Image (cartoon, rainbow, N blue to C red; front, side):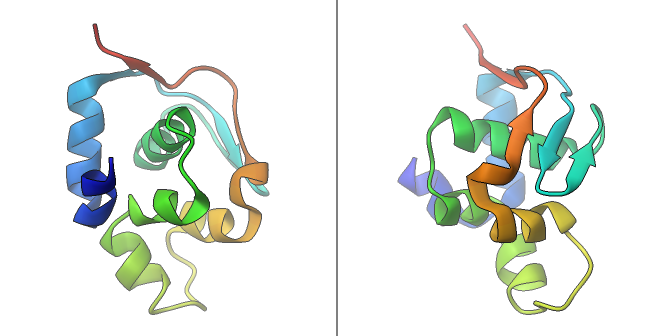
Length: 106
């Protein structure tokens, strides 16, 4: 798990999730933002994976790779990557799913 967190690549994280889990597009709430099923699937996968593994806030943010480290942290006043920005503000208290987005493949 630490290796995945330290890779700092969103694409590698998504590839790992896609290889090991079945994904069902799921509506989820992140702070004051509602993401309908099928919208922002990458964020849905990351948050569902992190929740399944009970990752801390910082570990979860690291899974977004350069989107977090470069796009968000280096541009704190930006308007992009709203799911990451909301998670920074609301943390796990702001995340809720309307179903089970990920199931481990058998």
